[in-house]
Each structure stands twice: as structure tokens, then as C-alpha cells.
Image (cartoon, rainbow, N blue to C red; front, side):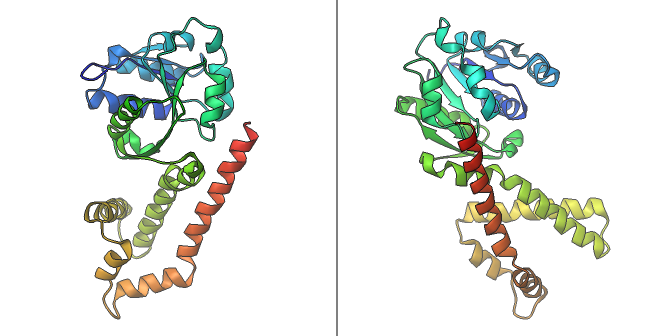
Length: 276
């Protein structure tokens, strides 16, 4: 597949599928004409989104698989057996690579549902993929090759960063980077609310809060410096930053965030168990 445009199919055409498709096109890995997506007939928004992108947008899953080299499964976990159940009896080649972004659906489950010999990679992206700033991880299935891993990395790097992990880490990853954007949005909103309380115009407060979080993340990522060291660098003795940090720590800020990750991880495990 090296050097050639990839024929990519999406089973499920929601927001994440749309973000991934746009990233793949922007990176030159494919083009709209080599993308096909299927959505439920009632999901008019997703059907229209892929049509507007210039891709083929349909309501049946089997043609998506037949026409694609790489099939991205982007449906809710409980829909996976329904969406993929007919593939075993269809006339489908066994040279397909399947990437699944369905939360909690394991490699073993996917390999049991899909046609015999299917190559599977389980992926957990997050919503900043919409602006090519996602944090994705993936787990290689038993039959996936090193070439498949290379393709998966190339695809995921077009929508942000990607890391390979063991499947046992996936629930914690989902709680951290999968749910993490929601925690960050809440923090940005709280920062801005604090600024407004202290007299800042709301639009300015949101811009400053968002850029501060973006810049802080970039500092940690790009300098590879421990965040505690970076925190100390801007915390002068007896200053306003030290006072603000003390206020947060006194009210359990750190422990609350850690607890949120733990609670979300437990919930991921519950969802996975209920889908078995």
C-alpha cells in the first residue's frame, strides 16, 4: 500500500469517523473519492457529512467492506455485533485490515465476530482529532502484521499523536485521554468563570483560559520537562501563583482529578462487561 492512496471504509459515520476521514485526506493518505461510509438510514447528518466531503455515503455495511482495504468500525459498542454480524456470510476477501474505535470491544470479540482470518487493530482516539490534535492509542490484534501497525500509525498520526499499548491498559487510557478532553473543557470553563468573577469580559476570559491550557500542554510535551518543575518555575515565593495553588491543593484538586480517572476507568470496565 506504500505510496498509493488508501481505500478506506467507515462503518458508522459519526463525528469521530468524520474527524478521522478529514485527517486522512489532509495528510494525503487518501482522497474523498477513495472513501466510503455507511450510516443508519435515520442518521441523516452523518450521511450528509460524508456526502459533503465528496465520499460515497450509503446505508449498507457490506459494500463498505467489499470496496475498502482498511475498514474503520466506528459504531457504539452494543451495535458492533449487529453492524459486523453479516460479514461472515458475505463474499468478502480476507485481506482486509479492520480498525475498531468501539469502546470496550476487545480484540478477541472483534476477531470472533469478523470473518475468519481478519486482521484487527483496536484504537482509542479522542475528540481533538477533529482539529488534528488527537491523542490516540492502539492495540495490535493476533493476526495484524508489522505492516498493519505501520499503516495504523500513519493514519493516527494524521489526526494527532499515537502510542501502542497493551490491551489491559485500554480502560485507563479511555478514562484519561478518551474522557480527558471533557475534564479539560470543564477546567477551561472554570478558569474563565474565575476571570469573569474578577472583572474580565467573558470572551477575553475564554480566549485566555483556552490558550493557557493549550500552551501549558505544549510546554510539557515539547520540553519533556516534568510538569511539577514547570509549575515551580512560575511559582514565586509568597506570590499569587503559590497562593492559588495552595487554594486548589487545600480543596483536594489533585486527589479529585485522580479520583475522576479511577471512577471513569471502573465505568469503562462495567461497560465492557455489559457488552459481552
